[in-house]
Length: 390
Ligand code: GLA
Image (cartoon, rainbow, N blue to C red):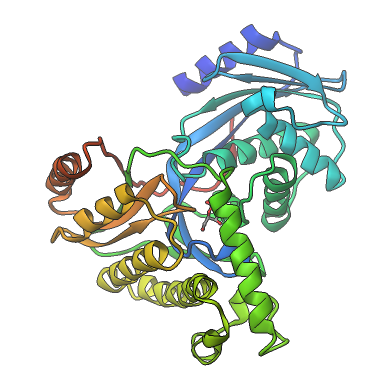
């Protein structure tokens, strides 16, 4: 038995006692977008991998209609009736599992009651999918304890509904799809319209994916992300006057955009240009991955960052510095901010040989330029959220 799991189970019994029923253990990784940001809420494409630090949930059924939750990180226990669940600001982290149960109930699943003990290791506020990991591990726990199964697209929709409708977060579908769908050793190509998940083995000769944390936290609750969604909706509304068939910015191809863009006011033209070209870059990146071409993928990542920074305006001084410093290093194929932006992390594709020296150089130069500490993770591509044999 894994000593970490044994420790978590003992903690579970200390907190909730033992109902004498089967204990379920589920885990879910975070995620990192390699390419394709601010595309999912425009029904576009993304290319992502799982982030190896995880959320682990130990759970057990209870039959009194209550939902018991304990966070090992907050050292806090919260218990509420499992029906008529509501978002309560004071419940903090517990709103995620509550939101997931609420969303699964809305999708027709029945709940007798559930105890959940949660340990989170995905860094928070870094754009690495910590909230999706918590939601995914809780959802799989609920499904296992209550004995139902859902397909990846349906479960991904439930997680998104929990975040959007229960938590009031303006997030899209790519994070849930990646966390639930990316196979071990793979990147995934994701389609936010069809919810297709295509596995792409990440076999880039001598290149590794590295996450670089700017040390500045981000939040999807601040207005900037929602503002980008609104701007994209407005750009679509205007572009539709040129072609009624457009259902989302995903339908606008590069050439058509170039023909129509002058009808858009400058800010909306910039946002739409990012989305249209970013979707195109993701399709090209898929080909680069299939061909094992690290240089081509790195180039697309660099272009994506410029577009996120100048057109989408969702970068920060720190992220721009980090990406510029990383990109200027000969060991780096390319780098970009990852996720929603407005803080958080960058992702870089780096030569395996000399990786440690690269990271040392970057830490030093980031400190000199920004005066902040940079954290980094070299990614080991773990599999999707799952139940662990306990
Ligand atoms: C956040 C959201 C995602 C996606 C990214 C931007 O991370 O959770 O759904 O919209 O921003 O690509």
